[in-house]
Amino acid sequence: MSKVKNLQDLKKMRDELKGKISLREKSDHPESMVQIKVSMATCGIASGARETMNYMIDELDSQAVDAVVTQTGCMGYCYAEPTIEVTLPGEKPVVFGHVNTKKASEIIEKYIKNGELVDGIIPDSYETIDDK
Amino acid sequence: MKDLSMHILDIAENSVKAGADRVEVELLYTDRMLQMAIRDNGCGMDEQTVGRITDPYTTSRSSRKVGLGLPFLKMNAEQTGGRIEIDSKPGKGTGVTALFDTGHIDCVPEGDLASTLALLMTGHPEINFVIRMKRNQTDFEISSDEIKEVLEGVPISHPKVGVFVRNMIKEEIKYIKSNEL
Image 1 (tube, each protein chain N blue to C red):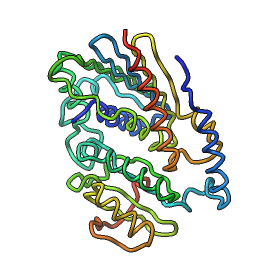
Image 2 (spheres, chains in turn orange, blue):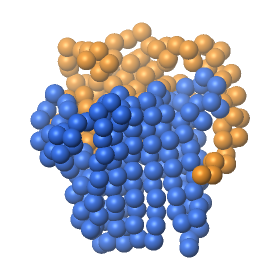
Image 3 (cartoon, helix red, strand yellow):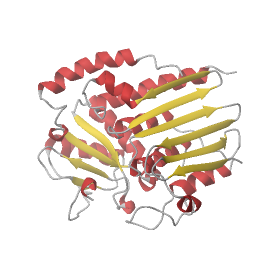
């Protein structure tokens, strides 16, 4: 199998990012960054979770917000897919339902950047997917 | 599922749930066929479970009683005249192979393969995804571990890395597809 050609370019980007991130010692402490988990099971995918995740990555990239965007399994809110869980540094995780690209943009603008809550939160006696 | 790449995302999630730390995604294109294989080193399943795995009322989760990932894949493969094969051993891992006749009128489109594969890698930083594509004489391979090695500690789930990986895979796919027989 042939290797991909532009891993070299990734090195350049790494150096830029490294300066920015390690300055705040963030790479070793992902919990000090905004963490976003997108529920990506059959129910989520069929409702457009992939598009939501792609959109969030694009937006966070273009607005230069440092975050970690990962996937998780079904959170059990199949009726409200796509669902995402957002954890701001030092805050409890919040789950949002029906997150299409429009909602995602609202969440980034209001909640992630300014800490203002927006509609669409799924109330729950909360435990993260990792505690289950 | 609306497209083939969604199936990859969906089936790979099973591997994640099975506790795998290495997942291979292989796409082999021949003349009219696409062979899509997802293999993991997760917990695997016994023969009995494999036997009823494409039953929509079989699922490992407790939050609800239906599991539609594999049944959907089976349906979409079979409606093109293809099939799926599941090979699993407890403690060793599971391999799911699906064959699609991509020239069949009922074959769902491929979808956004590049962003799907990129999301898999960046969405699961703890898992080493190995992606292989081969079409006629051209091929490429990329793994999360290779990317992480270059990143030297910068998180692979950072949005900037996500966009980069997506574009990188897009280029590779474009290159592979430009080489017709």
